[in-house]
Length: 84
Image (cartoon, rainbow, N blue to C red; front, side):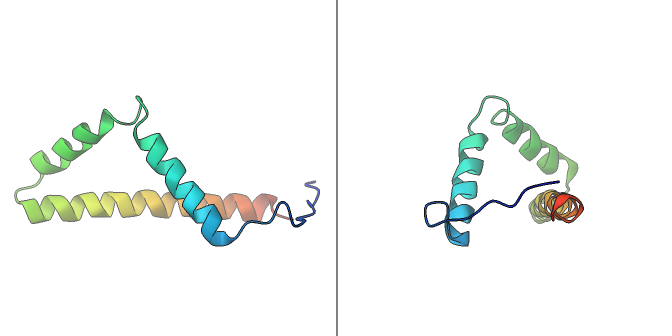
């Protein structure tokens, strides 16, 4: 079982601080050599598969939305399963 951690004054962070740290970490990961080359490949995939620019943008946004939904769902499942 997971032991609760005492969140004293030195370990407290606001939700905004955690969000900003995660956002900055995501941007830092974006420029890593294993991620950065995938950007042009993904963009060209959506532009070549779509007949128009609007359709390509809508497909790319849907793709990004589903990535967010999948990771949030997995995070919630893990939190519920291993939480208390």
